[in-house]
Amino acid sequence: MNNDEYAMIDIAPTVSAVLNLPAPAQSRGVPIQEIVTDLNHEDRIALIVPDALGLFAWNLWHDEMPFLQSLHDRHSIVLRSVMPSITPVNFSAMVTGTDLSGHGVLTFEDSFVCETLFDVVRRTGGKSAAVGLDGYTGSELLGRFADIWGNAGKGDDANIEEKILEIVDLHQPEFIIAQLGKVDDVFHQYGPSSPLVVPMLKDLDGRLDRLVSFLNSHAYGVIILSDHGQHDVDEEDLRGTHGTDSDIDCLVPCTWV
Image (cartoon, rainbow, N blue to C red; front, side, top):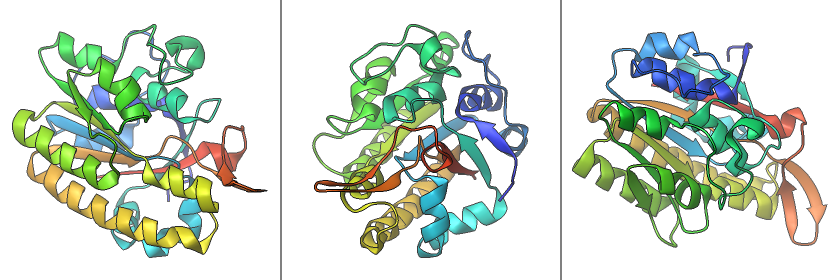
């Protein structure tokens, strides 16, 4: 893994640079040149985001995820989440290039107060899509602002996978972002260091394998990252949580293909 540390706000200008578009107006990030160089021949970009798969958990369990490990063996960097290290704030950072003070989103019920990647793509004649479940940021926040609202209902990550395939087959948007929420749910339930999370991570690895193959075959460059990590706690109904400025909550792995 590349030891250089980048910022969550660097994702929006990176996507813009790959697509040869301007960054969102208020973006404070800078393009990650490694990604831009490798993907600059792509006309479409997909961000696939396993929620809460931080560097702490990745270092514990990467041997259980051989496909994702194979991608990290080729390209791998570390990103730092913006504060607070929670989902709506960091998904918003990904699509705006700025932090909470700039994008104004603390919960998925909020609205952006600045330009997004969705706006940039739309202004240049392209389309964007956001995919998520009922009650999750991918649908409740991002879906409201994308051209294509990829709501996958009350299901699980399998439904997210199906919705991505459906949207790409029908629309082939230039930019798509999808939230895979199962990691966060299971980490909250068992804690990120519990062996009980391994079956879920194996399932995620297979899903990422299928999605990358499908998206690559439809001329998408794919960036896989997370929004934040999680740390272990010992409470009656909660074994994992996040939101602090600790490295465990803030450092996440990122790869691309």
